[in-house]
Image (cartoon, rainbow, N blue to C red; front, side, top):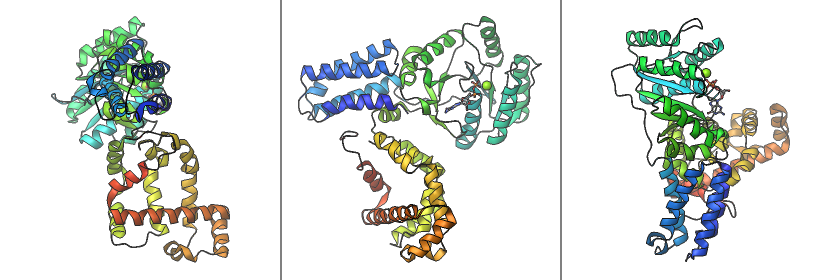
Length: 455
Ligand code: GDP
Ligand code: MG
């Protein structure tokens, strides 16, 4: 996510990060590079101008020049302004109304509306304990209704059927009645994709909006369209009072122009970010966390929250106790840890949120991608319980048997055993010093030479 922008910005920042003094020249050239980075990221020009002006004002001010470490202070200012431009604080959905709270979803064709409806239903159900009904008013593409039905079944949301021969407004009204009868807390209304220049289609959604009076009207937009995302959001907002934006496909967006432009151009907050095709790939948008991610300062908070949600608590606790008691970390434990990691989107998913990791991320992900994780799993499966408990038993003849059983090479097994040894060492250190916080710090310190910058 936002890799290009991160590389450019951290590059510019690294040059001043250790400076004990900042000259006007220093500041000027840094600002020039930041400006270039933003423009290349496809951030809208008015946003770039406002951003640079703010940073410039503060950079020449007492706050930076007088600070003990002006380079660091300047980075802080940039981070702070990144937050400001994205909206300072995270904005939740407002669902405080007589149920069902109606959420209307609008946007261009292919933006990710239907997918986002499924993701939102899951999010509201799992994290806010809401009963959710979903309905599609996309009567132009029958496949779209079916698509929502499938998603609803997957996330176990109540699906209200509709068909292509109905009028969107009739569908919406019937769905509201249904949601009331079912005591649903939330009704999410999916709509057909439309262009803001298509008057008939815009009229259709205006009438729909007036009829259902949604408490949330979300504009769903593809992050990869850069500043166009902000401009179309603005055009929609002129026709339809939006309450927020869902920025989809942020997982594939290396530039970040949409994320940085939407708020400033539309005045409306980004409320969610789509991070993949699966129904759990939706994150509330936290400007401060995204700003730290952009500056490669890591997003440890999101990581911890994700870990809390996805990690099997019982197993984790058993494991923690075992480690506490100083018991040996065997291959079975290693395998459990690998599985937990896979639950969190693999090593790449974890690393992308750690400070200073953006540069090693790709190399490491390659080294330990999903395929490798599966392979490691296969090798451990081919071992006897005794071998798992005591890897030192594994001599050459056992290695041959395991490699034949798991369809791997002897050197794969050697690598696995070596990685396990390393993990074992790390676990030992952890028990001595204690806790997750230490491990996080340990991982943060694994920064590549020249990658990230000191905090
Ligand atoms: P709609 O026409 O606006 O309803 O768009 P869809 O929900 O049908 O999505 C269009 C395509 O975008 C599908 O292939 C989705 O899987 C994909 N998609 C949606 N959201 C995301 C996302 O956050 N990340 C990625 N990588 N793909 C997404
Ligand atoms: Mg759709």
